[in-house]
Length: 369
Image 1 (cartoon, helix red, strand yellow):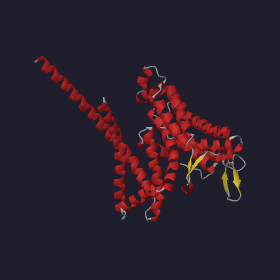
Image 2: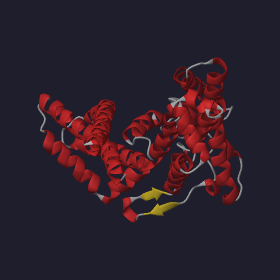
Image 3: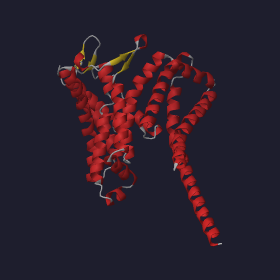
Image 4: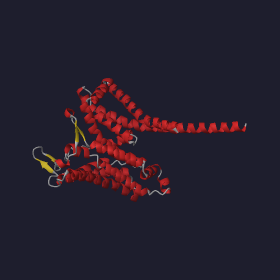
């Protein structure tokens, strides 16, 4: 039993490690092809990531990436591809900012109200895809892609002065009303290095609940069962349609939290400059982290480090787009590495079963002799 667990752990770590190593090798080849020195570039990236101010930046960047990865992973464990996290978190952040800017309550009420509003909006937006899947058989991939576009249109409609936004005459920018100080989340002051967003605590709590819910509860067992085989789950008494809708609602609720670190710890309002694309980054983070909370956390930190490293490369006469190339290569390598490791794991299991059967046959022959 211990040997099986050891083999499973090795196989689990092999895919992301192979993907990252392959990504660095391929990126080095790209740099060489463009006449750049790869090892100096990597040295610059590592040095930049080791500075204390960069570590604060990485943690702050990794927090929304981690939440996005968890939101995507919930769908993955259910064999659902929630590609709509991007629209869900942006729409959730917009309406949460509107609610937060419209009231001025004590912090113990104001902050939970904003967070619950975001989770509710995200869950409702993702729930549309779940309902369409179980009632009309519409693929959640198509539905969530379309819902991303609709979310952008909805935000654009309301982000007009006089509706749910206001025009700032001094900067000529449009945003929602600023959230009062009672709606600001706490942070960890690191002096001259900056402030670590306190929402990282919520992200850690979400990761713990994700792990506990999937591995230690009946709901998590049913979710994983449906993800592996809907027919087998249905035969064992699991309500597959209800699990699909519930999973999409949970994924959307967590997606609603993705914009909260920026909204409550930094911007305090929703504007045209609010970060976009985090939902798609969450897909890569979930894939690289193999849907495990610790793996997703490491992948989110890696993505944050790559972003801060790109700024340093510009000063060393490197194109910052090389980091984007590296991120794309990592995603591609992850898909390939997982398939290679999966096939090796199946082959390894077949070999072990064959060895056990051969050993049993020899034992019977020896006993008969």
